Length: 158
Image 1 (tube, one colour):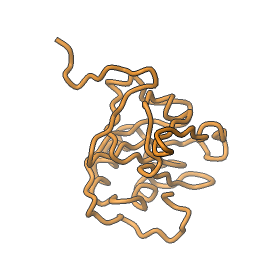
Image 2 (image 1 turned 180 degrees about the vertical axis):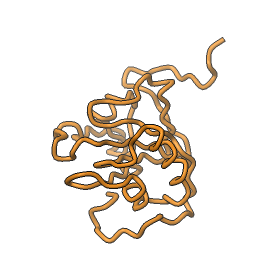
Image 3 (image 1 turned 90 degrees about the vertical axis):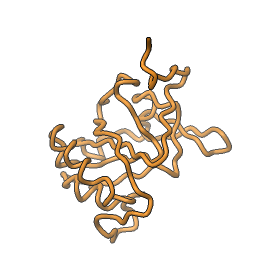
Image 4 (image 1 turned 135 degrees about the vertical axis):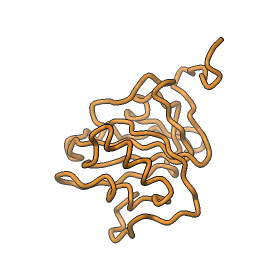
């Protein structure tokens, strides 16, 4: 009997949509070394869904850009606590995220990607990392929670 969490793969990848979950990827590759094509989005469903090289690499059927946040530094590395802590609702998931980051030796990062309303699964997709990002985990979040750190720069977590 198959895994009841297993989803059939559609031609364009898997749908990992799940309320109150945030999936997090982290990188130690300098942001400037990532090709623009990695992020170039193609939209569908009245511009509410997108795909790009990142989402294709991780076998995501699509993502909703309004649920996507990124943060990091243009040069060098920054603590993942600071990078994630400046993002939405971070007090609700920062401790399990830091635990996973320690296990994967990603406590210092150049940038992170957070995708809310998504419970990505390496077990289902078969992909943990690509040349630029490593999947850290999917965590519960509380939409009433505060950010761990205040955001001073309007470019942060965009």
